[in-house]
Image (cartoon, rainbow, N blue to C red):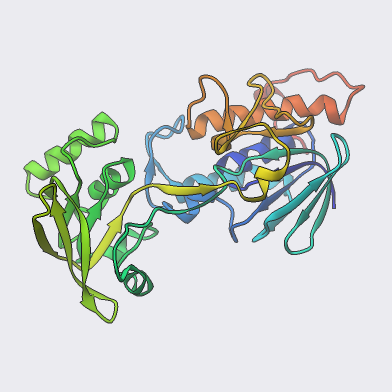
Amino acid sequence: MNVDVAIIGAGPVGLFAAFECGMLKLSSVLIDALGEVGGQCAALYPEKPIYDIPAHPAIEGGDLIAQLEAQIAPFAPPRLLGRVVTQVSGKSGEFVIQTDLGDVVQAKTIIIAAGAGAFGPNRPPIDGLAAFEASGAVQYYVRRKEDFRGKRIVIAGGGDSAVDWALGLKDIAAKLYVVHRRAKFRASPETAAQLEQAAAAGEIEMVIPYQLHGLHGAGGVLSSVEVADLDNQTRHIEADILLPFFGLAMDLGPIAGWGLNLDKHHIAITHATCETSVPGIFAIGDIATYRGKLKLILQGFSEAAMAAHAIYPIIHPDVALHFEYSTTKGVPA
């Protein structure tokens, strides 16, 4: 396969990069380790509302991905899903990309839109956790809210995910508890205030200051969650489901060996072009870092447009790019 741009990562930012490339008549391919497009939006929170997408007061993760897919449909970029990029060789204008399934892609340029690499949940250090994970009594993601209807749910954590899902599930759960080691939450002020209001109204029971201490049940069926306070005094909460939200463990995987200038688990880029330290390789979205970077999907969208425009002269060095608004040129045929 020969393309102008290989886009590694098919989350929302990668999908929008395919659109921006299409608008400049640059051919592209989407490569992703997951078996479906959408990244974390599709895999972790398809029914969770996102509030900072322009023109959408609220849009669920799955709906956002559906809209982005509709947006790139006119360009029909091929997709290599369920593949991990294992090797990148060559130089700007003539990169060769290989995947673990034997695909070989020749690309003039590369856009890395891989979020923060491979991701997985940070698991609580609790004995016997695996058995409850296998039965679904312990889950780290909410894909369908309806699956939790009528359940006694314990949510553990103090970040945005814990607070957002407490608010999202309180009207579905038979009983909902939030376990956190302190009264202050690391969530947006607005949602933290909503959590306090829900607790005051009796819709949510706050279990503070406590931490997870153990799980009780038989055959993977959860009967209670044991928590302990700062003095190691324990309490048992009758529950059917535990949702621990302690963030994600990130792993750059093979990307870490590509010779890029890394800043911890991120790729340092030149902000004006989104180019990495390797000419011809660009990075956008959560995986990219620079001074003043905000980890917002909308900033990733902006970076996708900047990268596509920086790539154009690499593909067409002798052609001047005259910027045109989409309102005047429409979508290229």
